[in-house]
Amino acid sequence: MSIRELKNLLGLRGQFLLLISAVIIGSATVIGIYMTNQIEKVSYDGVIRRSQQLVESLAYNAEFDVLVGADEDLAKLAAGAFHD
Image (cartoon, rainbow, N blue to C red; front, top):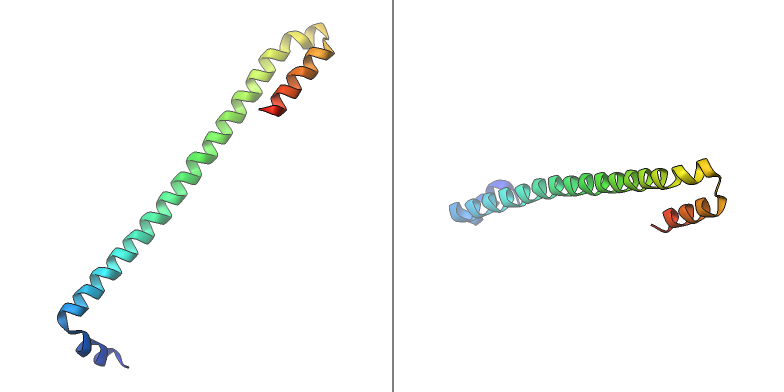
């Protein structure tokens, strides 16, 4: 079936509906790709931010134990950090 035969078969109303359907599908695809990328970026940024907070917290809490040489307390801090 050629395009000309398809045009005649659909008529003006069918062509209009086909065009609107194609525009809706195209728009939904573009919006879906954009939203997926945004969600991925926000998730990645959240993981990075959380890991930085954990590292800073561990460093702050370990500062005194490093100066004193409390190996047991340092081991507890490290185990707690790996748990989080």
